[in-house]
Image (cartoon, rainbow, N blue to C red; front, side, top):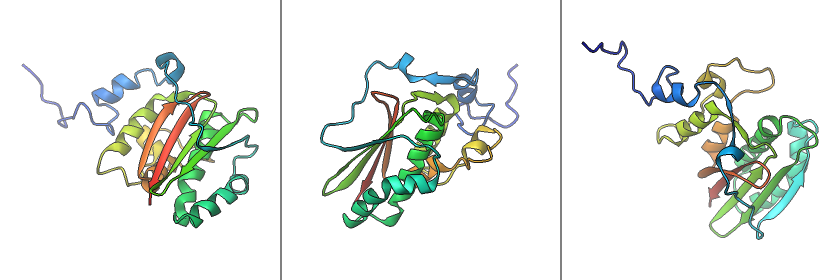
Length: 196
């Protein structure tokens, strides 16, 4: 006799820690080295403007000072002031999660302005992602969640660190029209597109 699941659990429910997809994909709660899985790398196109930098503190003042001229350029091109939010969060994620606060590792900020959109690429020197982060991204790609804030620490059922709110990736998805992730030449690349 087959026992009925107590809560009619959906095997592919990304939010339910006991679902099949969560148990299989994060079985050992491992970090995933993208370089072990992917051979093809995304190279930042030559027609993008590129700025390379190291963060010392990784705070808003430091990121503001590095990006202020770009933000003014984007606003002059007709993009809203809040374009800063997803850019800030992607840079902060690259520093905190990709580069692990390593002062010797660089972040590459690249962009291309066109008549129809703004393309932004941010690359860290990590290339290692948390297995739960994959599910978190998939959750953001669901139609009803792609413009809602989801807290990573609540989603992953982990203790929130003192200096991290767990909402940066959600803000990126809320403010941008399209987000993709690639293995770059040096690490993880987040690609963000904002349409005019």
